[in-house]
Amino acid sequence: MCKNDGGPLLVRYDLRRVRDGISRDALGSRPSTLWRYRELLPHEDGDAVVSLGEPNTPLVETPALGRALGLARLRVKDEGLLPTGTFKARGAAVGVTRARELGVTALALPTAGNAGAAWAAYGARAGLRVVVVMPATTPDVIVRETAAYGAEVYLVPGSIADAGAVVRAACAKYGWYDASTLREPYRIEGKKTMGFELAEQMGWRLPDVIVYPTGGGVGLIGMWKAFDELRAIGWLRAKLPRFVAVQSTGCAPIVKAFIDGRPESEAWPDPHTFAAGIRVPKALGDFIVLRALRESQGIAVAVTEEEIAGRMRVAGETEGMLVCPEGAAGLAGAATLRRDGWIRDDDEVVVFNTGTGLKYAESLQGERPRTLGIGELPLERELNNETRERRGR
Ligand SMILES: *Cc1c(COP(=O)(O)O)cnc(C)c1O
Image (tube, rainbow, N blue to C red; front, side):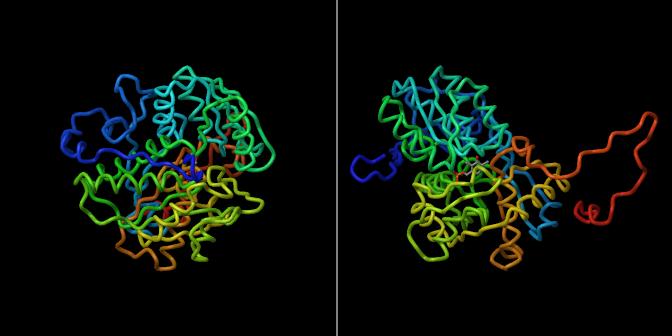
């Protein structure tokens, strides 16, 4: 955080040196982890990285899901396969690596849930003390997961903003490292690798539209920064995508600021959504998100809880993908924008599924399956018409 105005700091690289030092083809021989982009990541010594083997995540063709949503050219970048089940592993891998290099022994962070789990896991790997403060309404699986990595976990009434106030005061009092979103500049460096991966997977070009479920907005800012760096070193010449930030109608500060034409958001009163990762009433980097949306000719859109639940189900039924509610919000946002005509029929669309739906099993809908009687067989029946249509058969 900047000592003068409290604003976020961003890491800058000597991009000329990167450009002269490595070619994009040389990446091909490197392992498929986020560290393959190490010249554009903040760490001093390649052997000292804290890693749980974070893979490059698949960019999945989803034709049947696309048909169900009216999107002819839809792909999903599935971040659910990372350690701890969300893209927060990217930020934690790089953030914890850098914290350890800086000599940190104890760190604290507020979280809507998944960042706490990721930092707890990487902190355990690095041998650091980790203190996590999260809303009492965080999904139980995530609370228990975080504790299982040995972190000290505290719950607070309210939202991540209330958790943040506790962490700030505790860090001031005890001298802990404050790992809150954008209060240290390294987490975003990890998250930007989503952008590097996407560009590389697409053969060093980008889709027309990137849809991102937005809470703190760090992933979106990170990708924006990633594309900027790739252009500066000459690896990317293609036009930039239009960014879409999707939020829930129960917590939509960025959408409201976007519609009102304002440069930053106002704290959302009483935020609620079961998509816990995007329940952020006021993001520290909101002004950067809004700038990225506007400069990219993008847009911000809010979707309802019913739409989120519905898209979770459709993704599972059509493609066998158990997306998280945040990812489902992204799908719902894309469907809305297609219906409105903002996304055109021939637009290539990538939606980020930011985590696995397994962590949200509590909120999965549907009746509990019936237990068969002894000797009783399942019913013999065909797929019903609706399912057949969704599956494109
Ligand atoms: C944190 C989180 C988000 C929001 O990410 P930001 O980059 O902070 O906007 C979305 N989805 C999931 C699953 C998350 O954990």
